[in-house]
Image (tube, rainbow, N blue to C red):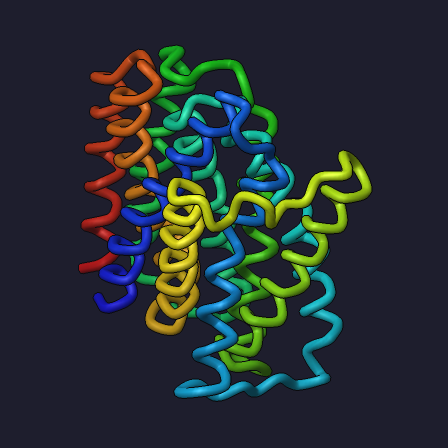
Length: 277
């Protein structure tokens, strides 16, 4: 239950940050590179502070193969997600990313994590909700492929993350190093591709708020995986992401098919109920 609470609070912060970011990119006040850098900056700062004060910075060299594989997938995931977040409707992006859940269920079973029949039925309800939307044109066409690629990459990153913190590294060591490498990668890519300095706007009020919200969300998400299987945590995260995307997408971006999306969201909520009881 603690993992679910951490995800719920984190998702509220994450959705607010994503909405600010998408709005600013659409109005050409920030680029995708800046959006990616802002999303990771404060998370990295928080992780570094925690690691060297209250936390335990434990990193095993035996994890280098899986850590390196995760880093490559995280870079791909970041690029797919940033482009999808801007091109697709917020709710389309959120719903299609639920494809991660059944794939993670298979990965959890392969890694030996126990899953109950309720959790399996819960995942099934979530998949049914997604099929209803796909069959009734409840999802826009823009950004569909990018959203699906984001969902597939997330299976690898989440599975490797869960594996590393279970058998090798502490949460703070794994996430601190990963976020530092990702920040360096996106800053370097921005400089090489466009000559952009991604740190230029980070202390302006709206961008500072966007970055800080994302940082708090990342911290909460990171520790949630200690308290439940990856498929359960991700199911809850994706489901709350959908609800937030429907609300914010309707209010700020005038997205359509709200009633159909709310029906699908109700099925998703039922799936969550089965998974966490």
